Amino acid sequence: MHDTSKVTVRGRQALYMQVVDDLKLRIEAALVAPGERLPSIASLSVTYGVSHITTRSAIAELVRCGYVYSRPRSGVFVSDRHPVSSLPGGSVIPANDGASRRLAPFVHRATVGMIAVAAFSDLTGPLHYDYHQAMTGATLHGIERCAAEYGAVARFAGINLDARIGEAFPLALDEHLTAGVNGIIVVDLHGHPGVAEQVAAHVERIDIPLVYVSSGQTTNPPLHVYSDNRAAGLAAGEHMMRQGYSPLVFVAPIDARWADERIAGVRLALSKGGADPRSLIVYPDGPVRITYAQFLRDSAWVPLGSAADQIASMPQPGVIAMNDLAARELMDLLEERGRTSGGDYGIIGFDDEPAARQRGLSSVRPPFEALGVEASRLLMSVFDNHTLNAEIRLTHTLVPRMSTIPT
View 1 (cartoon, one colour):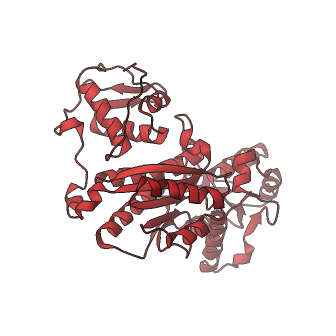
View 2: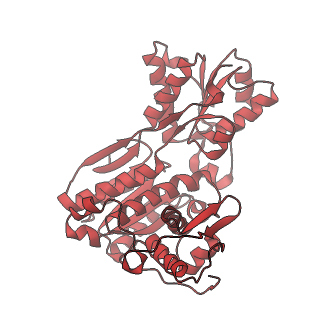
View 3: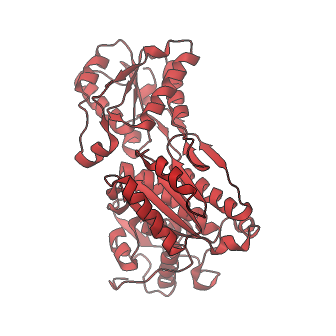
C-alpha cells in the first residue's frame, strides 16, 4: 500500500466508491496486511487523484463495512477480520436499492454536478476538524452518498469566497455543462452575496435542473433546500427564556444574512413570550460588523472585550452568540472577569462543533449532511417525474448543556 503511483478513478461510478472498491480489493488480496496503518488522507488523495472530501468519504464507507477501523490521533488501520464483497469489484449494494430501482433507468446513469461556494481551505485542508470544512464537506458528502445510492455519479467544481461571483459562477456552471452533467446542485452555506442572484439568472438559461442549497430562505430558485436559521434563533431564544435568563444579548461580530435571520428568530421568541422584541441587545450594532468574506480572508474578528464588559455588568443575562467560535471566546473573556457560565450568565452558540461540546456549551446544531442528502433526493425526483418547483426546509437541533443550566 506504499505504492505512490497514481490510480485513475474516473467513470460512471461515484468517485469515493471507486476508491472504496480499489482499497477493498487490496485488502481482500492481502496486499495490505491486517493491522497495517493506511496512508494519510493527504497521501491517499494524491494517489487516487481525488479531493480530501472524497477520500474521507471512502474511509468512512470502509469503516462502516468493517474493512478498517480508526484510532484517534493514530490513524486508520486494516481490520483483522473483514467481510468479503459479494459483488464483482467489491461494490456495495445501495442502502435504498428497492427505492432506487423504482426510479427511471436514466437515474442510474445520471451525473450530478456540485458547485460549492466556500473558502478554499474548506475542501483542501488537512485531516482535522475545521469549522468551515465541516459545514461544506458534510453537505457535499451528503450529496455524494445519496447520489451513489441511486447509482448516479457526482462531480465537483468549487468557487473561492474571495472570487468575483459574477465571473466565477458562470465559469463553474459552464465547466459542468461542458462535461455533460444531468443536473446541478449549488451549495452556498455562507449566504455569499450574489450567489442566489446568479442562480436565479442562470436557472432559466440552462436546460437541466438546478437545486440551490443555502442556510436561509430565499424566493429566487424554483428548487431549493435550506436550513431555517430563523427557527434556530427562535429555539435558542425560547430556551434561554425558559431557563430564566434576562436580558437576552445577541453577539454577532460578522455581518451575514444567516446571523440576521438568527437575530430575527430570537426577537420572535421574545414576542411569543410576551416580551418586547426590541429589548434584545445586539452587539455590535451598526457598521462595526465585518463581512464573512473579510473574516475568512483577513482572519479579522471584532474584539469582544467590550461585549464581555457589558455582559459582566448584568445580573444574569442570557447570551446568544452567532456561532460557537464567538461563544467560546466570550466564555474565556467572562472567565477572566470572574463570571461563570450557567450561574452568573447563560450562553448558547450555533453549529455544535467538538470544542463546544468539550466546554459544556449549549448549541444549536445545523443539519449539514441532511441538506446534501435532501438536495440529492430532490434532484433524483426531478429526473424521475419532472418536478418543476419544490422547497424543502430543514430544522436545527437544540443541544442543551451546562452553560445554560442555572446552578
